[in-house]
Image (cartoon, rainbow, N blue to C red; front, side, top):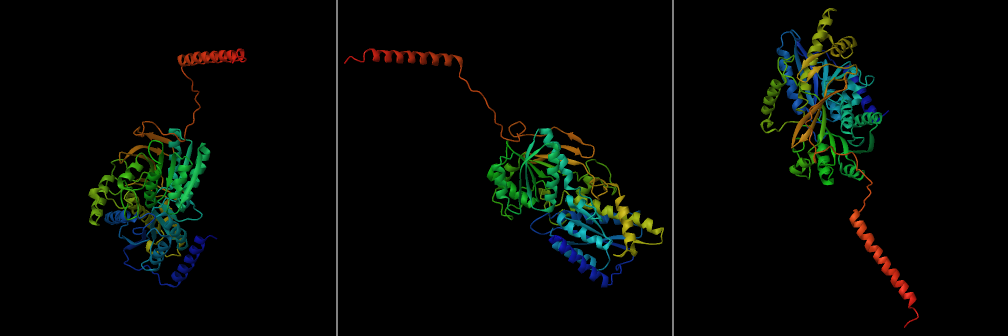
Length: 493
């Protein structure tokens, strides 16, 4: 058993003993349905996406509770706390949510490392976990996470897109730079398998914990030209600065970055994080890189289930963030802004699943208020309702695969003159690439994936050759004449 497995086992045991002996009647008012929320907000590493996702979830709660045909006679209540994207703290937050009344019907969670711990534990209490901000491919394992769903697509959805782009631009030699986190390790393993199938050579695979200096230096030694980078945004800033120092940017190099960073990610928090590069140097190094991301905002001006379009939601979210002190008017977005629609749609998914479950339970003279942590029957009804949930949300069509994963298109962007430009979309299920022909390359042509060595026969011009031969011949004749003259007259003094 791994160390993580041992820790999880003891968490299971401790919570089981406490919850078995505690008086955990539902508590709260009889017209309330309670869910728990675990949001990564503070902290210094990982993903602090709760900064924008939590306000989005609050907006969704307000909208859900105002909908007359949804959860009639009930009000949805969210109890939440900060996990700082730390698995240990996330387990503690989960413990507090489960131990303290009122009883929770479902858990929302964000950040892959925290979702891994929470989802693995939640099955012991027959709780469904819905992750709005977790992309780890490991979470697709139904045997390990049988009660998990997520509105955030798996990170492996990017890999077919990366392979498609490599084929499009004729790249067959790539390097990989990853942060040593489970979400990136499992993503890289999937990418390696896909590269092998596609005939793409992986020249080197470098990893790091927090300091990427040596790893980036090794990329330069290996003459890496096309590089796939997988790391959280804090590490991405360190990598970008080291790229500048090692001159791994410009017309000879192409970097693939994760697309869910904020648009100005390379300009913020430099001083706080001890980044020694200037903003201008970071901009120079970032120019031209490619990103892939699952579509998180509805691209059409359609009215969604909430009665809003994606743009109307954006305006409401911006207003809420400004009230919380974020300088949205000067493009200072909090972390998790891109994923905010996923958190909003997650709350709607919960409400719709509960609504469907209530209808089924009503036929058996039961209610969601009858749920306890030992009630597998009601838990199975909630699971079935969530599994069949499908609607048009702010993030697009919300539907789940058999592994509980979100089904979504992938968007491709490039950093051009300091701004992200959309290059196209890729549908992995239909293998359909929609390309807009907006890419721009430094030097005006697609970079090569290796140093090209060409053997060229170098010759001199014919007039020069004749001239040199004539002069050489004359020199030879003069030399021969002198030798003959010397031999003929050798006895003379």
